[in-house]
Image (tube, rainbow, N blue to C red; front, side, top):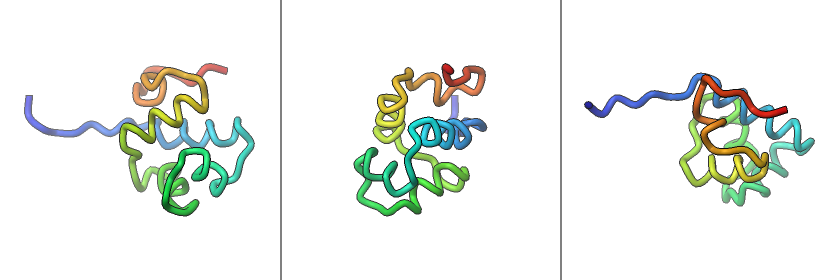
Length: 80
């Protein structure tokens, strides 16, 4: 119990890998994710400085056609 939050350690690398697989820029990724912010928010996700909220993780998963679980579970890899 308690309210300690566990941040996935591999999330940033997975988000970067998704964008690279889609072969899009950070600006284009922000547009695909329907983000109101500029490319800098995508950069902050990929560097681990900021963690996307659940709806953004869902959008990443849908773009990559993977279950959200693959993004947030450090024991799981992205499918090739």
